[in-house]
Image (cartoon, rainbow, N blue to C red):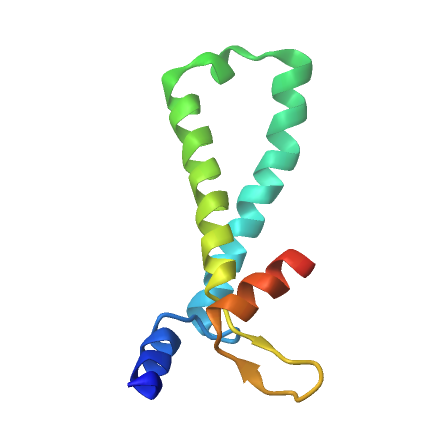
Length: 100
């Protein structure tokens, strides 16, 4: 029973080196670059395009992706520095996330 629960937990984890995770990270990096450029422009110049509904929706979409990235980070495996093994524990993954 315990082994079955552990296997189910492992199924919900995303492997650190998974190709889909790499694509996800690329999307997050693009959104971060967008934020680095857009935020100062919006604050400094208050352009008209930043006041529309389309911009508001896009900004919230970017924020949603950043929130989802936090959830993905909690469910991503990592390598234990002592043993070198890949860790599939969601609890340990969350602790590592908060450690930085």
